[in-house]
Length: 221
Image 1: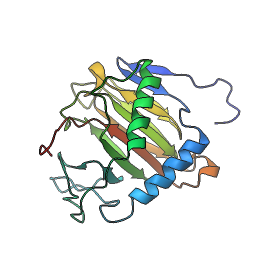
Image 2: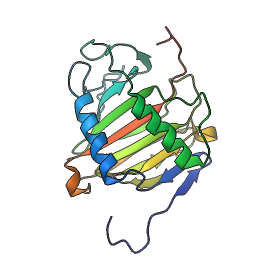
Image 3: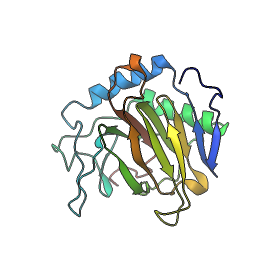
Image 4: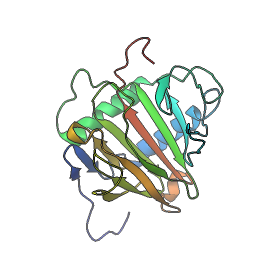
């Protein structure tokens, strides 16, 4: 945000959990937004996710590489139109490795090759309850990129959905990475702040691109 008295700085939120503000420049944000719009188109496009208990997630989602559904992975959009999932672009996997290096200040390990992306679209009063990213077999860090409206991102502990947790404001272009002892921490989005995204981006709402290493191997999804 322009005109801030104190510039936002990189912050360690918990062991292995790092927030890097303004990591994506304006040009990269626009490129990523255009890619998200292409991925959202059918087949295997943007869908509403329903939980086994009959609930409906208010954030809509599209997947790349493998299709996430509660609570596993498949090679087709099993809870959507049934089409094969779109491939994970090499450039997006590379962006994940760049993000890892930026957050941790080290070169990614050979096994940290991002092969899954979950793109969540929040509009209106959409939110995400506290949950863990636990369906992957790999313990590689999760990379999270934000576009559009700011949100309150709640980062908790590995034992329960309750306290202790810490609320972090994520804005367009921000990077958040969590791994190591925080890899299975509960986290969620209790609130999106409408109208706070960059005017020049051309996005109403919030997009979150989450990159993961599945570690599932052939035939495991």
